[in-house]
Length: 132
Image: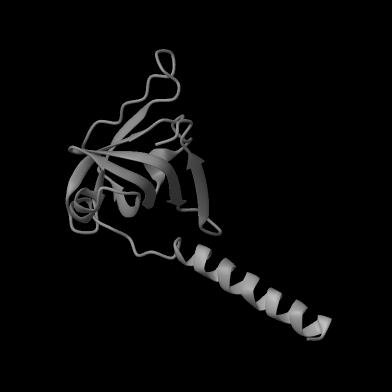
């Protein structure tokens, strides 16, 4: 076989492997119910339950942030993120979380905020300081 054929086949193989590994991140968003059933890492989308408590006391523990989120099915649960509270968190329109359900609490590994802006939508990405 020619070297150019071997190179082309290896590039195609690498592209296939890359697409397969990237496809794991193209999952659909779960709800709290399906996250509890799966037991694994899921993506969850919802909005901040503003009538419930937001807990963040940086003087006691800077990397502990807790709030309540209402998912796409209308279910509200507590979320814990082990990272500092983002600035203007209360103004976010939508919150995308990656994490796992542990009993009745969602332990977030990372959080993406969609915030309103006067000129364009902004996204803020926050990653937890501890591994799940």
